[in-house]
Image (cartoon, rainbow, N blue to C red; front, side, top):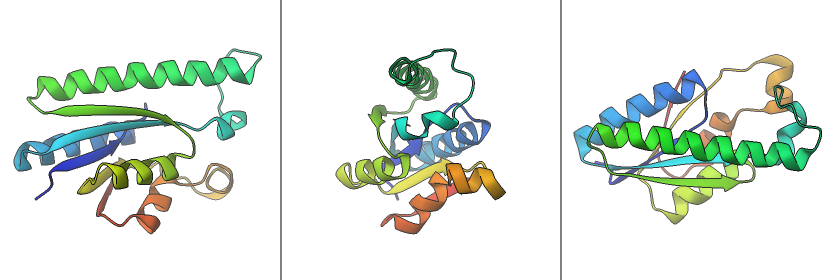
Length: 143
């Protein structure tokens, strides 16, 4: 059914649920997984937990963490016998996921949602919501 399944990867439980689901689907279809991690520096002011005084250092930390995460998830998926490629990118996560999906002609986008509401939804937004609204391919969202 799907040749390639794009999976949006971050360090959340919701993303892990999407990864697990995408692995099951890829196994059934013989599809390749394309793992994507996007670093959005514009939202750095809202990211807590980084002990660096300079945004440039924080962006570099996010890049390194994203790459390490992709490597870990790739190894896990390959251990399940799946074909996996990764993309680390920078920019608005929604825009980047849609761009990569278009360029790589993926058949399905699989991602988790945090289910944010209120002010956190207003300020951080919903990447999943944006992808669902703008995608030209099916999007499978899990919580």
